[in-house]
Length: 192
Image (cartoon, rainbow, N blue to C red; front, side, top):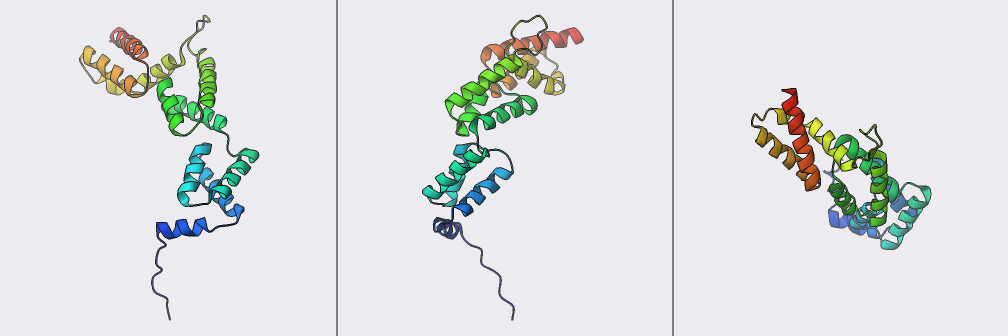
């Protein structure tokens, strides 16, 4: 005789089952699975395990163990996040600060990582030893990435406005937006 279709466990039933868990290894395993896809902040892991319904005492023990093992490290997470942003999706310091804050990274870690970013990127594009803002470098990279779509706009004033808007949406300071959009406009005029 075949059994009928299995009934799926509801969210509340799963939470109740997880709340009854007494084995710290189960919670540690759940946290490790969450970290498989990408690194996460301590706050993200805490939110995930709390939302899953695990007891607070077991949850904190799992987080402590992951910290000891080096699998959780907010500074390393913030560094990787900033490097990823600079490489793949350039953002201004204000946007990066906001993103990391939403991820639950402490302000002191954010400040440290952004200071390292300033040191690392300040040398890009300057052969004469002049300090260059990392936001300026990132803004130029973002506009370079969108250059083809901006070049399709025939009116130079509209093109500059679109460049400015693109930079502003990505968390760049208004002064940086103005400077880079104007510089890009001049460069486009010279190439024409």
